[in-house]
Image (tube, rainbow, N blue to C red; front, side):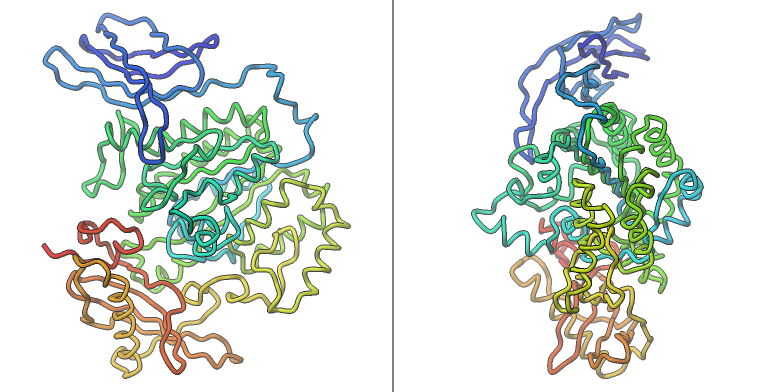
Length: 546
């Protein structure tokens, strides 16, 4: 009913479809910290069912919460809107592309919980659209951690979460401000930066330290936080798809990207946009997004933004819940997120060695660690010149297998003998290992199952309200084939526990003792079972008594 409009340097509230007289309040706000905003100006205005003139509300980047009530004091409108005026034409401080050093802009478009096969099933129109733009689909892209945070942090930092947290979060529970994430590096190099998710419980927010200062030039989280606290309602009974004033949170993210596109035309940029609501919880939901993503890429193409931009369309892992996840294919797909790169066609002509390597790497084992190294190259395209690629390749291939870097730029040839261990992929997520089903009542299987349960119980032991779990049944058991040259013995199990009827999967390596080769993951929903704790890494394991 109220939309933000920008005209002649000023911001306006523009009302439409007002069916009765309303008394409204607006609160101008700004980000206070990663968990709250502060109101800095309150004003009142009236709307008439007979028509309204635009209401001027100053200028620049602004964020408002608006609430309108009718004569009976019922709330008829409740929303958060924001203004992102386009950059001024002929802005003196924004050099044209011809004046800038030759570098690519970067856009990361993330879709949560989307495997390679689920992408092919759900996005037929987008798959057809890709025929019109140069792109590479990376068939060997693999998950390296349990959740979005574990899989995105290696891309943004080149480090595993535990490595990064030891380096920059260990003192006084610091925030991520000084962790040297990629958007900091790109900003130092002169790029404009942006970050947006379609949820307030974002990758760096849900049980995490967050940011003291706004991490990027353009940042959607304060808007999503305000909606989540004051204007949110849900489309589904499970409250997993949220809305504000008739818009899904995903639509708010799309609006944010649309407004940023004007900046993308006039400045080099590094941006991260992540979509999670609905798609990570409902198997068929992804099909509804096909047209939205075609429109998004068409707009970038029509605005010529793709002429100077590397787009990474990607996910973090496959579906982790829903009944499909319980099938064998669903289990395998969980560790094989989709990744495709869209790039301008002039890259092939100008940097043939580098681009040939990137295309060949489409069939190799690839991780987020490699993407981090790749994006560092994007800031200096001189590194992609043939003679630099040849020299860097010689140095890379001169390493012994044990000295090989964990993250390798995709503009270089990935080593042929690379395996999950050298690529930084825990064995539990390794897509290279074959699985052979074995009897669930075998003695070693039952011992392994008890080890998995005891491992979970050690995790939840510090949380008094979480009940200790017991093994109810081994549902599936697999021998993990690590290859003929391996003398290591691994089992992958799915177990059902009580109380709570939890389904968990884990992989254990058997030597003189048992040890885990990755996190134990839950593969069925737990919803409110863990209401008594609020720890991201504990919730899935905790069963709270009624």
